[in-house]
Length: 326
Image 1 (cartoon, one colour):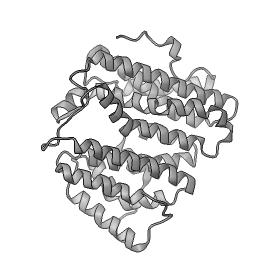
Image 2: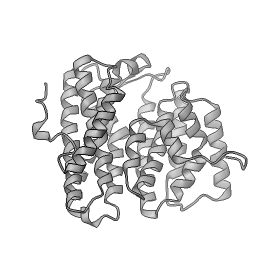
Image 3: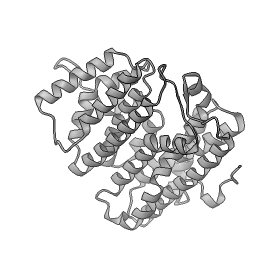
Image 4: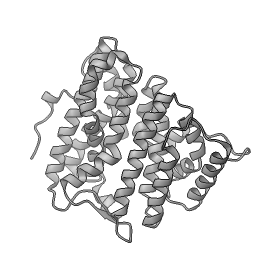
């Protein structure tokens, strides 16, 4: 950014690059809200490189590794030379048009600002966000390396699908859990349960998106549903993961009710889980491409607020979830 460029705004960047997270992140208490906003934007930058179908495979891989290098190690800030290099790189990335999405291009141009806000995080939070973002970016590069010359990728089997979901979403669940536990001594007794379900929390949301978008992804050369894997098996796994995610949310809600967790942590985690449950039901009934309406989203958000006010379960209780179809 030059001195004449307008200063970006984290919340506006979030609104222009997200749907679900733009609804849920503002529910978080500070400083976790700021930490998660910065983290989301960093992960979104990596996602933009992974999805850059207009770029050659080698350029996508190089961008992911260079971006990871910017976050790796233990620097507390960027000196003038490093900041100038990041600015030049961000301009080059944006000019090369890795995406047709205006919000993603705006975010790429704002990379220096997002990195500045990253380096301004509390040291412990910065280490958490940086470490997990680097893991995801380098993991994404590993999958991009497997694409063919046209950038098309096909996952091989269920283990491959699980590995991919872990790289792009399970790590996010682990990062969020580390941030939730940071400086919250009252959650120490819940750490084991939360950590055991963190990756499955992320995988659940990713599998629902993969099932919903499978036909559109396939048209663009991304076959995340392995040909050897029956779709019913993926629905089965997604429901199991959503039950684990629900247990995660209910653990936080119990902590909130005893005064050891913020209501915002519960709301932030419960909303995407409830939206994912509703979306999975819709996709299973109506097929890929179907999604819940804006009215459904508003209804689910209102029901969540009522549950939090009443102290009733914020998500489906796993024992009461519909039977899994195999």
